[in-house]
Amino acid sequence: MDFQSWINNLEGLAAVYSFDIMPDGSFSEIRLMGMNSQNTGMLHMRPDAPEFYPGIPYREYWQDINFESFVYKCASTNQPLYSYVNARGYWLKGFYLPMTAPGTVSAQIAAQKDDSNPRTMYCLYIVTYSSEVEADSMSQRSEGVSSAVMDISLKLHEKSDYHQAMAAAVGEIQKVCDAEKCSLYTVDLSNQHCELINKDGVQNDYLNTFTCEMGRSPFEVAMKWEEDLAKSDCLLLEDLSVVAERDPVWYSSLQKNDIRNIILYAVKNGQTLVGFIWAANFDVSKMMQIKETLELTTFLIAAVIYNHQLVSRLEFRSTVDGLTQVNNRNAMNDRVDSIISGKAGLPAAMGVAFADLNGLKTVNDNEGHEAGDKLLTRAASLLKLAFGDYEIYRAGGDEFVVFCPDITEEDFLQQVKQLRSLADSTPDVSFAVGTAYVSGEYNICKAMQLADERMYKDKEEYYRLHPEKDRRRRSRE
Image (cartoon, rainbow, N blue to C red; front, side, top):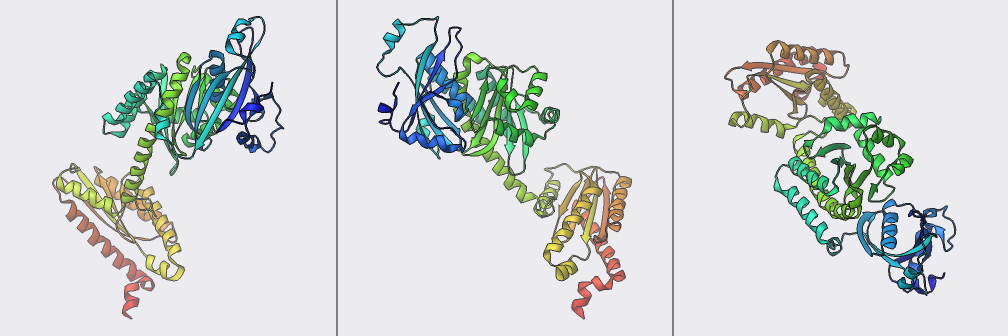
């Protein structure tokens, strides 16, 4: 049958698809019957794509499980459908319209229905696309979907704490999906950091458990999931056959955990991936409602995640030294202020160490600032090795300060000794070190002053033994 004679008059990217409903109720593969001239360019997106002919299998060109589900549902139920999704790098506004072959009408087809033979169904799909989201298109939802989205949106903003708000929203999504399990899997591309949040809060121990089960890091799992989506916005699967084909490792993990069906929905801010909605063992009878709800919900959640990640990065940059990745002077001052003001409780004991990197000016003058930066990075690495999880600050150009709250004096001195030992075994790193250990009712500023004075005495001894590295002496000569 000729669809081309009238389809070229349609605006947008328009195409007609068909499939057969078999006597047992199953569907055949989808066929591409015709398309307008605006759509023909889509056929050449794959360099190995075959030449078009009416009735060519749709999967010769693309494979999108969600699109196929909409075509099947639209034509088989004789109901028009609408979707607005963020996929393939664009916002796609799609209209699915049931239709008959040219020259026939629905009443005639119904009168001639014969359940003993396959029935051919047709769907007209018209799509427009834009690089920017359209608010009006986003809001065109059924009353039930709009109500669900409103409930989720309220949960996102009821609590000021980011993780609590996300946990509450995930709980609402789990209700919409009627799923046994549901989580938000956040992804920060800037630092390859991932988190898993379910209705009970952050579950990073479980995140590490199931990703290790697959032999992947949490970030590697996220990147593989994006690949599994195959440029679609989501996977809503009644069974796991597609996962078995695309990602056998993930499929094996799902089987071990008694997962029968799966939802994986990409959460994107614009075209930037910030996470996934993940749900398992959901009510497949609600699939279309779930998809409509998540299309809008993920847009709202993406904005919250992206803003949180942006603020976190700004806070990180304001408190962490970009070169050495230890705390910076701002963070140190805030820590001291919080102790003095009583905002943070006074630790029962405190070990304070001042460590000044010897010879940095000489390296900068003779070898350049890049060599000096490398020396600072190595020095910071030694401090991290020596003091582990204690508070390390870069207070100035070549000066570091370490706070060791609630440590015994013996352990503190042992860690200072370890720092000196590490520096002695590293040819180009030398520290002048001064320490103070206080307990009971003490003044943190006086402890810092004492450690600083002792550090300068240690530095004087270093330059006495190495006069060639004393820039102060050379400047006087």
